[in-house]
Image (tube, rainbow, N blue to C red):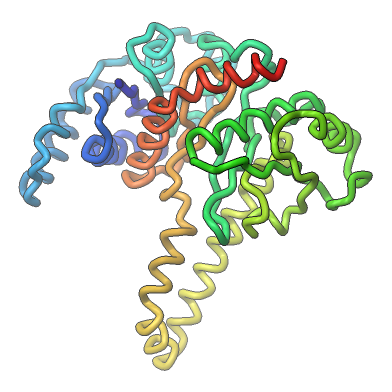
Length: 341
C-alpha cells in the first residue's frame, strides 16, 4: 500500500508534515510518498531521521518506507478551487490526487487548501456511481467513543436525497472501518420531533425510514457528543457550523480549567492530584488525535487534514487514510450503494 502526502499543504508545512509522516511510518505498514519541493523535503527528512536515530530509533524499516517525489507548485490557502483547477498538474495537491487516479497510490492526505483538494478529487477521481455529492466525515469524541459527523463542510446547500446518501456512506464507514455493529444514524435538526426542522430535514427523515440502515430519527445539536448515536447527518453548512462550535467549546473549557488552576495554590495542588484525569481528557478532546476527515463518496481514499495540523495530527491523518485503504472503503461503499439501488 502506498499513501501520497501533500507535504506543502497546511499552516505548518512542510516542517511539521515530514516528522509527522515519519511517525506514521513507524505504526503502519505502508510506503509513504512526500510530494513537494524535493530538495527542501530531503533536507527535512534527513534532519528528522537524524533526530530519531539520536533518540535511539530502532525501526529502520520505517525510515526506508518514506520517500520524496518532486512537485513544483503549491496551492495557497486563500486560492479558490476554480483557480486550483485551472492550474492543472502544477501543485503538490494535484500531483497527489493524480497518483491515486493512476493507481500509483491507494490514498492521499492533505492539510492544505481543502476547497481545492475537494475540487481536484471530485473532478479527477469522480464520485462513486449513484453518489451525487461527496461528504466530509469528521470523527468527534463522545461519552462512549466516537461519533461521525457528515457532511462537515463539502456541500453548503443540499437536497434531501443528498442527506440520504450521506447517511448510507456514514453508516458503511462506521461499520466497516470504525467497527461499529449496526451504527445508529440520526439527522441533525432543531428538534427530535419528525415535523420539526426545514423541508430538507423533514423530507430526508421520511426517505431514510425506508432505507435499510439503522436510522433512529432526528437529534439536536446538544446531543451530538452524548454517545446516543454513531453517525450524525447534516448539510455541509450546518455540519461545519456544528463542528466549529464543538471545537471552540472544547477549547473554551480547556482554557477555563487551565486559567482556574493558575489562580491559587490550592487549585494547583488539586490539579496535581487530578493530573491523570486531565491528561485523559486532553487526549480525548484534542482534535489532533483524530487526524483528518475522510472525503466519502469519491472513487479514491482522500483524507482532509486540519489547516493547523501539527506532526501529531499528520501522523494520525495518515493512519486514517491507511485504515480506509486497508478496509477498501471505496469498494465497500460501491457495493452497498449498488445493493441498495
